[in-house]
Structures are given as C-alpha cells and as structure tokens.
Image (cartoon, rainbow, N blue to C red):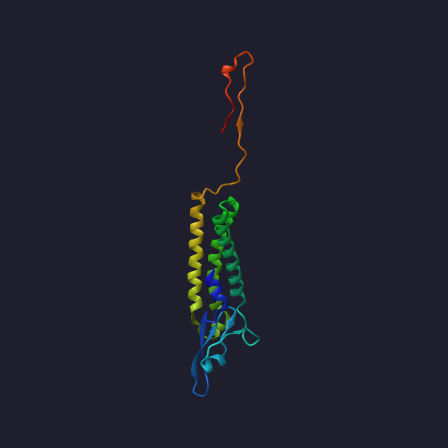
Length: 186
C-alpha cells in the first residue's frame, strides 16, 4: 500500500528527453501518474511537480488502474487485519480477500501501460523510480495473495458452524431405567 501512496505523489514514473534552446540541450521531463515535472522545473534545476493540465494529457487508464489496485489491495489488507484483531472471519470474505489481492497484482502491473500512451510514443520514455515501485508493489500483492490462500486452512476459517445435532435414543417401555442411555451430542 505504501508503494501506491508513493505513486500518487511521485512525478518520476517515466522520463522523456526533449531538446531545448539554441544549442538543443537535452533535458529529461519527468512524468508521474498524477503529476508531471514541467519544462520550467527542468530549466531552473529545481524539480517540482504540477498537475496535468490542457497542455499535457493525463494518463487516464493508468490512473484508473492505480485507484482500482489501491482499493482491492486495501480490501485484502483490511480483511487480514480484521481477522488478526477480531479472531474470526467468514470463509466467503477470506476467499474474496485472496482473489482481491490477486486482482490488485494484475491491476498494479497494468499501470505499466503508461508506456503505451501518446506521451511515450512521441518521445522515448525511460524507466523511472515509480515504474520500479509498481513492480515491487505488485510482487507484494502477489505474496499477500499466496499467504492468504495458504493460511486459509491453517487458521481454521470455515463456513458458519451449523447447530449441534443432538441424537436422541428411545427408551424401551418395558425395560428398567438401567438400560437408559442419555442422548449423545455429536
């Protein structure tokens, strides 16, 4: 989850070189999922990030994958922590948490579609720190999914217990009370 938080604020998911000035000096512009580093930032030497505007198209598809991966991963973490604190959880909820974590892994990796956008097709984009964070976070979601799945049997997570069945034995009317056996609970 910390990786997804970082991706929300970082403007170094990818970088694209551009040539500026009379001497055509090459400067790297940095692009993030939600913010980018404008040309003025690169020219002054003091990097800062701006929100995408009408001059730069926001990477909408990777942003949607980012939000969905965060939500599905957060659900899995919530279920895990709820079980650790409360000590009980339903089978269906735990199974949903396992699949949710697998889905978070896939959605996390789909954020790399950023490199297929127009921004990266016009200029050759290079890998940034945010791209590496995507891989690390996807790996973490995958490990969480595997661990949740393995712990499914170990934690005793089962469906809602059925009511205890009581087996009744019939008393013989002609027999004595010595032959009476109390009902057994199984």
